[in-house]
Length: 349
Image: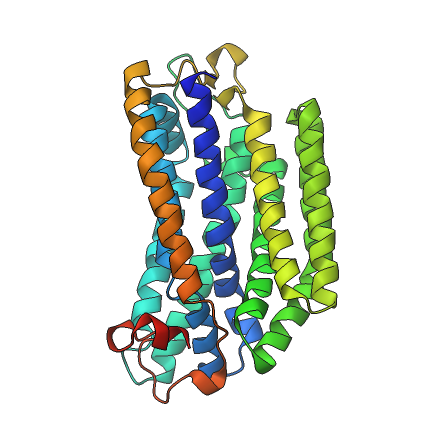
């Protein structure tokens, strides 16, 4: 297998890691006002992702860095052409991160409420725009002979792109509801799973429509299997939510997200950015890649570093695996997760 193909597959894996992991904490942020009834319950929800959300974003940084190093032409066209939506995503991620840290620093209900809405917005915007971006990458965008994007923001807001955005929005909300069911207890858990069950049908319908459109318009013969896997996983997740089996449900939404990413990247290959202006102007794994020597060096680095990242994150999730409930939230309105005063074992208990 050629190294350009290996790196295309590795970038796909990195996006799977990012969207599966960051997907559920986007979901938690979006569901904050729908599941919680008071400040303690909101702190419970935030505590389920507080130890891991920033680690989840490592996958995004690595995916972006790998794209820059392995496919610089792809990176240049993508980040210049999608500048505004990517800037909005970056701003939303910054606002959300600041909100996590600042919401408990002042003893004021209005202060906390404003930062809570910042978490909601900072989670909703990326959840929507990532779907819009990936749908447009697969469908193709206006690219000229100089590999320059010639469209505008409104070029990206087409029916297929918007359906992709609605798909990721609903999928991440469903994914987040099941994560909350897996990580909380008491009424918060009950409400989360019930909301997940309600989200199942619209998620299945919208995601199913997007997967079929993708397959019929851009897919290959073998990618039909991914459509079937994603559909079966979402139906199983909905059934699991109705039976209050949040563990199975969360596993199935993770599988559906992974299958969706492989469907998109599999439909894209060997292109990395198809041109809707002229197929001859499309960026491919060959004309957008770095030199062979660069890819060799990157492969050796990745062979060492990727397992380290996976092992470290696996350990983090293991340490913070315990359920969280209102009874475990201390009085006052300090930082949602007071890492400065607690050992990992205390914070996880």
